[in-house]
Length: 143
Image (cartoon, rainbow, N blue to C red; front, side):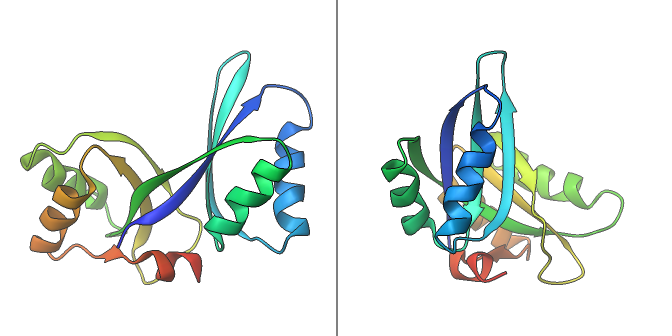
């Protein structure tokens, strides 16, 4: 049920993001979601792609520093307070959220949000008990 996220450490130089996206594109790897956190000197690019294992290898072969992390993708009701309800569910079981970002595609009428949490299993259990849909990795890669 977890989703594999690729993280790439990038120097904050012109063209580096283009090099990553070109390497993925040239290898028929499609980006489903991304997030960039940066400072003056470097950035961390987080990606959800349709072929995470291949993306990891392609980027390593191109000389990028790459790591893989498990995240969860959650359908969040697309209405005022929808995200707050999901966050409340996680907060009630003391699951700390390290970061989150919204997903580009949708699987239903709801928004799709990617969460990196301290304890994926506890988060997924709590969300399911509240009938909040957690997507399987294969569902996310196929979007």
